[in-house]
Length: 395
Image (cartoon, rainbow, N blue to C red; front, side, top):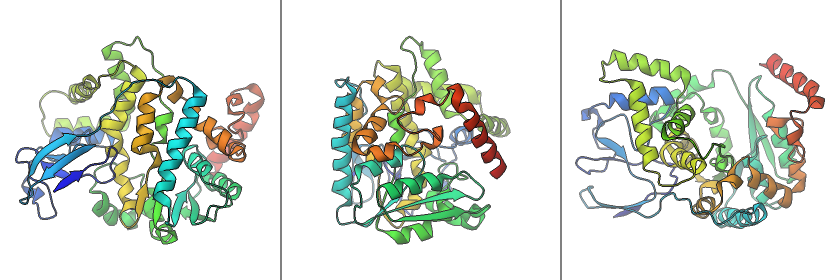
């Protein structure tokens, strides 16, 4: 049997790297020794890095690989069919935007044909980019959004987008304490392979999944919002930036306490630095922006955010159009400067659907994609102050 693992998978498949046996439901994980250092890393970051798990001998299958498995459930060969790279040949924003629109729309419409689609909307850019790709009044696409109880007014922006595209719209509220009733179900779904307290979709999934057959989600859109970093950083400076993006301050405090409690050798800080350094050293590109991006998407993103996508994937199909192979190849061929500040997404939305571009951008409310760069101008400070106070009062 040959398994083809996706470049950016939703489900993670486990195997014993010493015996090369695949882990199935019948496999007794209770006999496996705990990898306490990896668990401490998890406590510091909220996810397991790269192929690590709770157990020393149990790893996740590599992404973007062909894995041959024999009749006794043992791996006989692993062959990589794709890896991240950086060969910039696209330097013009108009060209990059046109190519993005071409491959993005192709990925969407090839997958949604004949399906009843569920599209979550927000006040951000990623779901708006998907909405821009969809013709107005597209049949069989149902949109929805949700707010936390007394939280931000995300529904307001989502409803404006749905109305602009003439899409049916459903709204939900996430009540306080929602996770306690759903916690055992969440654990069974995700295996606790990432930090669980932000799994707000658990509050509404039973109702939402009644709306259609396939979720189309904006995960991975941040690949068009890369962090600007200098080209002249030395290895330690780049490593410091990478670690700052991964480690949570409160998590680091907890992880250090666990490290001392378990009497582990060395220091947690050194372990984290060495783990991330090894990964960075394996990324053979000469652009620091892309180096950090590949670190995020190859070693972190699947474990950090995709684990919770199992909540959607449990009973319905899931499409992640930003993370489809042709889109990722386009990213690897586009100059890194064009992949910062959401340049390509903003240009695409303006060209494809100007009415969506005029709807307020939640991060820059009340400004939109045409004037958001004026956000810090003095004339907008009173409005920003009022909006900030309203948010605090609601909270």
